[in-house]
Length: 493
Image (tube, rainbow, N blue to C red; front, side, top):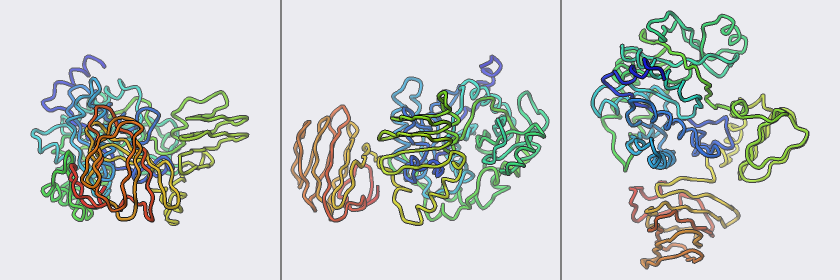
């Protein structure tokens, strides 16, 4: 980072407050991305996109702890990532992140409004840096440089959008036409262009001076709310109301579902950026992708001499230009050309690579047929840890349950299933029908149907058990909670 940029980063009176927008569903990345396990939390072979985004924000100069806004169904996934990052050198501020829970998705304009209200609640008028949680940006130095230039624009009372120089005609992004230079590296916005068709995108590139709209923004928290009140007053009114009636739930901030559902579903682009006279643009001179399709994963990954990308346990012969992704078993390919294959434990997707944008059509068909694979994932996060379904059969199910050190499951019972627990790793404190006992590795216990029980991890390492369920109904909603340290009610997750 240049000396001038470093000075700009620290000269302002207010810190940069990252606002991580994590409400997306990533439908075009099925079967890895699901309704309850969206793409920003997908296992990328080390670090998920949400973790990359928060780390990118936390390592900016003069940066305050982030505000995260996500769907309430994803709250434990987000919290688990932040808890792990807080243990890492340089990322300790993740422990002080605020997590706001959307009861329903209403797009980016309301989400940013709630984030702005949360930032102002803590005092001052910080510069909000709104970041999507599912982007890949490299190198980090280029991102930092762009943020410093954006700060110079935002501190003068402007709303800054980050533009990316197009690598080719792309129909999946909106475009920004650059105007005159206002200050070094900060440009007026001549015009926003909605997602064009292929011919329109090619014409924009031929015209020159156009950039992809990255969906990242910076502005003062107060400025955003003022512009929202002018250009989208119905959104402003609803968000102000639900904020005033918010409530705390453990480390989360919740809002009324019925009240928030009444908010218009609208993006920040439509609500504010395309209407305000305060919009400006800085260029992000970095490799950037919103990772919105399997084709973007293919483009971002290293390829072999035949143009193939192989992720996981993959063997291919006489194949070229393919994306082959195995998650749980061997994927073997022979004689394929331009094909994508994505394998998970419960589904396999096969398609021509040039149809990757159309996965949503397939997902819509699966939803019509009531397929559970569209929403649920075999790995599910809870406040105490997570569980993963290993086998699901007729009247039986096998799960792997991991309980974090100090984690405590609720005192509960089931009407329709019995459970058998086998301890694989760690130490467990088990309560069954009021009687407590300590289980060690290779020991087991049985919980009859209708019996109150609880599982705790009193140790210092993760507790791992194999749970065998048997019964007429094995759904997660067959649970009656008598006591829960996380404040969950009856059958809520």
